[in-house]
Length: 202
Image (cartoon, rainbow, N blue to C red; front, side):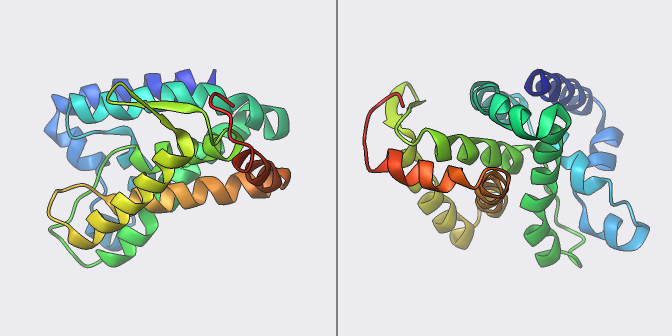
């Protein structure tokens, strides 16, 4: 239920912002607005707007598949509100290193749910590392995708130049793992056990 609500709100707000430049500018992460005007809500609201429909579609499809799969694990332990808090806090935690890096940069802006979606995805991978993920219609084990995703994000974060906040992807992934292990300490041992017993689809 929470996953569907998050998707619905994100699609609605993003769609509105596509056609309303003033709304986009008010919700986007713009560090000086936080530093000068104390608009701390931007640390969350930037996760509900996207650059274009393709950006939105990719994030929401990923959230749809992996959010639905992992949400019951969270609900059993910390309830529906707990899962919502995990997602919202992931938006914030994923962007904080970027915010501090660009705190005085009036020309920097960032938007999108990618950091929180990465947190959801990597939380799922902890429980099912060998599940097949379809990347451009090609089946890839989740753990292989995770390693490639992290490596690519590190490389692109250092290289820069593509207007994608790869740092948020990395920190979102790390936060998803950390939060999940703190919530369910057995997740770490479960991950290792399943990682050592390859079985596609589990």
